[in-house]
Length: 148
Image 1 (cartoon, rainbow, N blue to C red):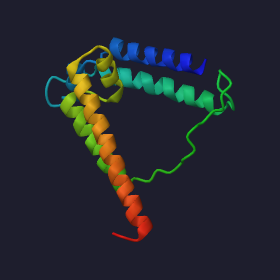
Image 2 (tube, rainbow, N blue to C red):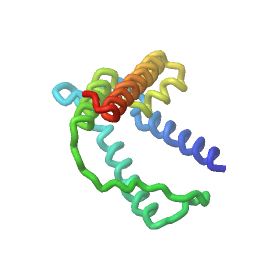
Image 3 (tube, rainbow, N blue to C red):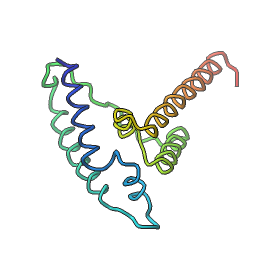
């Protein structure tokens, strides 16, 4: 039942991305073009999503089990540490979003639609994840062995 709920949630999310225009790279780039012909419509989409998320998290915090009976796994970190990894990761994400007009959720919608731009984005994203993992393991191993 959990897999069916996940599938339905993903389909609703993807439909919402298509309906709102967030799966359209041209629309997203229009939103990011503050100096040109700025399209503010996605700000309303994001504001609506934040509103729904705030209410959903507030309700979820009060529960010990999900509607399907699974244990609730809410984020527990209250840390607001801004470190080099967070800043660099945020910059890379923002640069990629600004260049392509795509972020991970809409990229999967584009892959599902068979669009080459989405496929290239997802492949590049996966390569980036592998590269990060390799560097992370090297750093962890060198710290463990006392090398720098």
